[in-house]
Figure (spheres, helix red, strand yellow):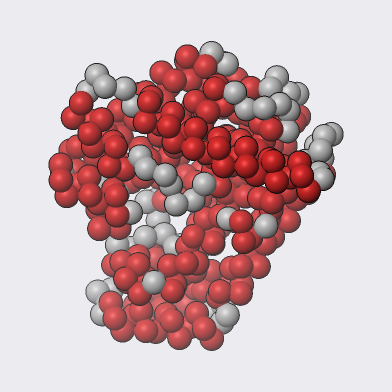
Length: 317
């Protein structure tokens, strides 16, 4: 892609991201003012636009994204927010700030209602779009989010294996990235092979993006301690325990993590171990491996994949 075309593509993407945010607000409707009031506190321009960019850039492989693509994008944001609200009902202090705001003002019952409301209007929007393949794709992603949440609590999170983290994250987070890319292919009436390739691409990018997000917790003392306190499934801890420690060290640390531990002391110990075993570098390398797989997917596409290539860069996530 020539430089001028590349710059125009970026500008179009920025404009379309804004269109998705406007569609989010529009699609909330006004029939339930109480829930809409709550929703406007949390459906704000998101910190990480990778999920929406995947949809938009995938669509631009075929033709200019239209209003249907924008509506699909708003649906993905509704589903992401709904799952986050439901996930943090029992641990509101672990939610993002705007989600905490909802529970503080209206209580956990409102979070449940809002999550259900967002799910319902998501499928109303998809019905209006009228593409059954897109509807099935997003429905399956929604089902997998629930499956991932169930899988997450199937074993102790603080001593979980990297494989467990990967399985949970693929269902709960990365699958929605893949669904966006695949939906773009269905919107463009592309082949099933192309749709499957784009889904795999999106899923790999989603895995890398989540690894990066969880790595960022290490440098944030409050989030670090909150993650331990709430016994959240956390990639750095999974990889430290099962890929860095000896068998005896693993046994000792696992025992400590399953007991009532001093939060500040455990944070200090884990920071020392993270530094000793170069966890930052190891997980960045793991994220890069996911992005390499994403790049391999692009080589299978029988079209110019330039619009998607920036999303294979770690710095873009």
